[in-house]
Length: 209
Image (cartoon, rainbow, N blue to C red):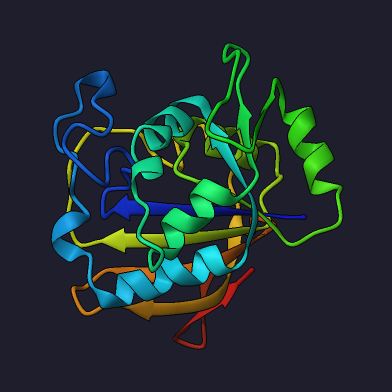
């Protein structure tokens, strides 16, 4: 299975609490709900496309419990995200969670369980939110594709997808688009990090990798 990351980000790189003020106040975060003013038909198309490719969903404990408290109540048959989140197999990476009753769901106690899922035949194993898990998967080099929506807003401190300790990486652009409210969407595949330098040759600036 391909492991893909799906994340909403602010311009300053925060992914915490995109859907509501009370969604995730850990670390005294008080600026939640920052996607709401920018969520339009274009965003709906992007999210629907994500879930049309879902075979299974991978969560960290915090995001699993937050979503479990919201999405089971969304029963609109035209809401693709709700239909897929409620019906798809879910896997929670946690060493402390003892039961997962937003089913079908299983608990994985380490990244070894994720590696076993990736080794299976199938389509996409998707991560939604789950900042700590996404950072661990990035560090382990296990992510096949990043799908990131960056909104035109800054919020200061908060959980980030790429922390200061994140491993350096390059990225290949697969596709991109801009929504009507100014959010930018990119799909990126990791590539080896490569640096370079600029030199002056015959009065011209030349790049060398």
